[in-house]
Image 1 (tube, rainbow, N blue to C red):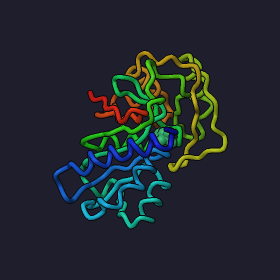
Image 2 (cartoon, rainbow, N blue to C red):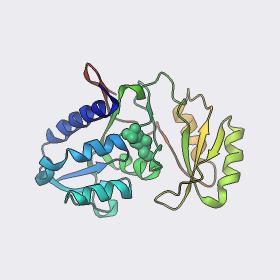
Image 3 (cartoon, protein in one colour):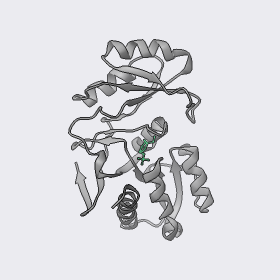
Length: 223
Ligand SMILES: O=C(CO)[C@H](O)[C@H](O)COP(=O)(O)O
């Protein structure tokens, strides 16, 4: 099975989770990236049960609108019933690294506003310790060099993702060589640096369920 098939498989499993919810006025949180897009592609049959969606990126919003699925501003809805999104890395505690697609801030906001967060990924994303994938940090542009120096003091090697401006008008530093054995602590330390908007560690708001695509079928991990 190739990666696309594994992603389609977990996307279908997430659709089953959404279909099993009892309400018919669903408010769905929609993530960003290729696995989230596999999920969006399968939403058509559920359209009648979807009141609205809240999306974590302009790209996902466009895809949803192309399917005639409504997209709302988070301020216009209450709590989100369920958020489905991918990840760049996950550990067994369902803590994640996200932001490979530069959408980490909106992703963390929608995850925080959601009753349930289902993370979907192929099995290669499950790791014993987070940090082989460079940790994305969204930064206010004027603070880029200052924040980079503070990250070096924390032991990381930040690299400016020069070709990217986020949907919020900010820049991304990808931090290499961090051994993330205390994700909660590091998430807070990074947030405390003035100029940091958000970092891609999802430890405070970890996933509630991790669906992993494997050649033997979908594996589910819960907290
Ligand atoms: O965090 C993300 C975007 O900011 C994505 O969820 C993450 O990069 C995984 O993407 P993909 O499903 O394409 O592997």
